[in-house]
Picture (cartoon, rainbow, N blue to C red):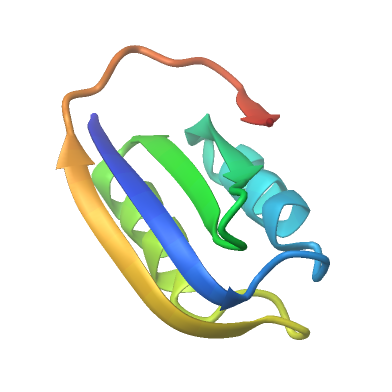
Length: 88
């Protein structure tokens, strides 16, 4: 079990970024959340099996078709035992 926090910058709001991340996380059994930030970025936390979490982090570097990702910050955190995936 690992946990990663990502902050994705660029044209990432209003392009179904959070919902696409939610669907991909749920299909991989990854828990966590995603939210729009006031600075225009999307922030997300992923907890789960290492390969599944890494796949979501890779997806965040590109985003859905209408997104234009310019930067992604990734940080490691200690897992908290989250369940489910929420859009905040």
